[in-house]
Length: 242
Ligand SMILES: Cc1cc2nc3c(=O)[nH]c(=O)nc-3n(C[C@H](O)[C@H](O)[C@H](O)COP(=O)(O)O)c2cc1C
Image 1: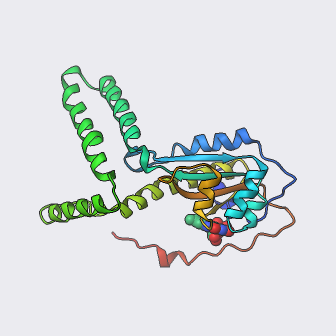
Image 2: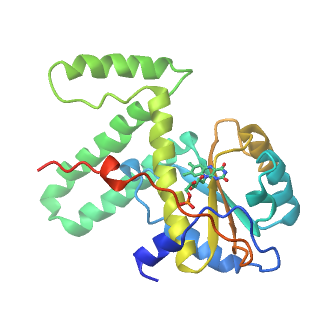
Image 3: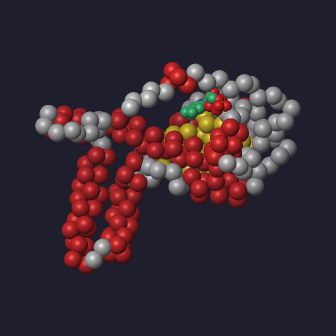
């Protein structure tokens, strides 16, 4: 399939053919491809729970307010964001960047470029991601507003802005996964209509983890016609600026 064909094939499927199982290894491979999605500062603060257990799927179906797209799904992927992984991801990025610098630049430049990366992943990233009941975000916002008086400055730095950043990146991962699935001829539906507390309990997730999206997976029923696709006229959404 070309990317256009995969995009056209992908639909939000609400009813799957329960007699047609998926190859779980193939679903896993689509998740591996989804790791190629971009994430903010390459922090990759997400994880995926690939659920193949029937009982757990039914339990998650209840947490998904009884939606049939979950109840009839063959497998599920629950995408979760992990604000608590900031330190370890920053450390991994820094280790990687150190290697890159050593491979790419002459030795006399190593210290300078390593210092730049250290200041990004050891100072700026921990500062931008720090949180404590909204208070750190308020402080950050005040600092940035002040700085913004003198130079262009990122202003979306409150703790709830931080959540948007996490879920934005995670949504790109989920979409990449759905396109990879589509390319395999598999179907999916992105879902945000669920009781996140119950989903977290079913998956034994810690309080700090946030469920971003459930993606149900299966093969669409051949006997159930797909509704027409509704899209706003493109001209209403496209603004060309020359
Ligand atoms: C963030 C997000 C959340 C969604 N949540 C649900 C949901 O809870 N239940 C559902 O049936 N569909 C859900 N959808 C699917 C949309 O309704 C669907 O993508 C939209 O109607 C367009 O249809 P299409 O994907 O077939 O083009 C969701 C889609 C997105 C992007």
